[in-house]
Image (cartoon, rainbow, N blue to C red; front, side, top):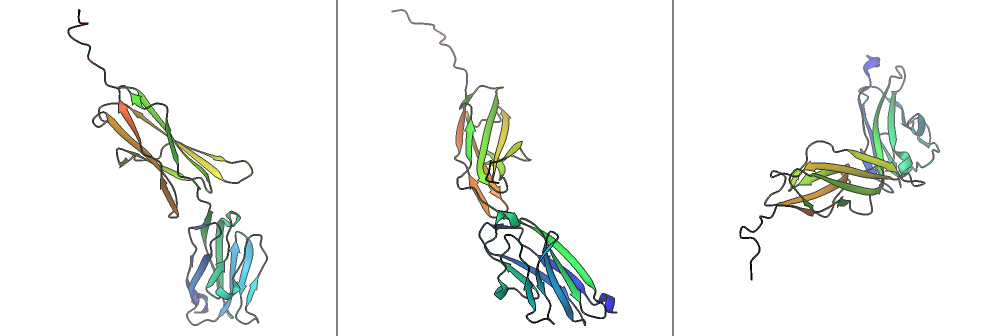
Length: 235
């Protein structure tokens, strides 16, 4: 059955890669008894690489801004991109076509994000360091200048705070880099403080490429002081 001559097409594209690194895109397939007619790779809708075994040379590269194909490391199953930049973030498609008589074609795609990591660790700030029972503790964690904006996770007394915290991501002018600021709000009470002390920190992270912690801050419970029972002493 020629229509079933092409099976199991799958692509392996890095989920995330650092700016300036090399990215290897793989396209696997099973032609069974058919011959390969062509492999075509696209970024979005634009073709940038083609492999046709019957042509000489079999490899063709189409100019696309920012895409630099290493032909020596590219073939019928792999494409190697050198010095990737943020503009190459997007969806990549592999189109596999069997030869005559079926010319059966399948397309699979996957996304890749090109990451700029922050140069500095995140910074944690609070409006004060002592809190009375019932007061609201508000802390901000800021991670500057990355692409995309970093994810932020909070830790209180060494335990990760579950669920997302409100985070604002701002695009920096002219840089296409982003700054993330997350806010954590807690009520000061006996469960928040351990022995009148609370340890607070945040982590900024991007995929599996970057994870850094802020400095840990210590906040203190402002316990009321008992007045002297005897009152002022009389000389």
